[in-house]
Amino acid sequence: MCFVKDGQAHKKLVQTLFCPPRLRSLCMWRRAMKQPNQLTQILEKAVKQQKTVHFLFLTPTVENTTDALSINKKDQ
Image (cartoon, rainbow, N blue to C red; front, side, top):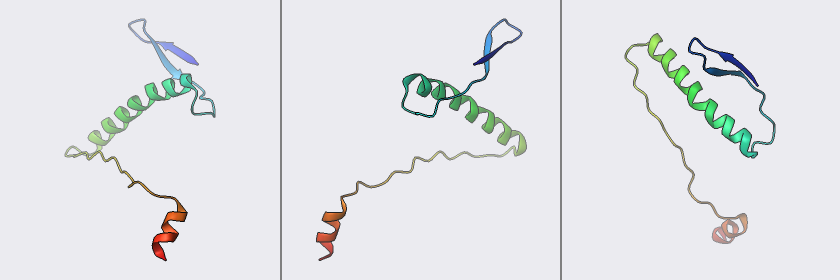
């Protein structure tokens, strides 16, 4: 992990390497800290490019599914 001190002597995380297993708690925590910052940067850039921007945040979901055997029985 690489940190840089900003003008107020706070440390800012500049670079880090995340491990491949996504279920490690430390890596999940780091990723959770990184993602809101990335989203903020993307949204700020979008607003600068186009002043009248409207955002729509979707959470797509999938209906509960059943196993293949019960589907085959229904078709018969």
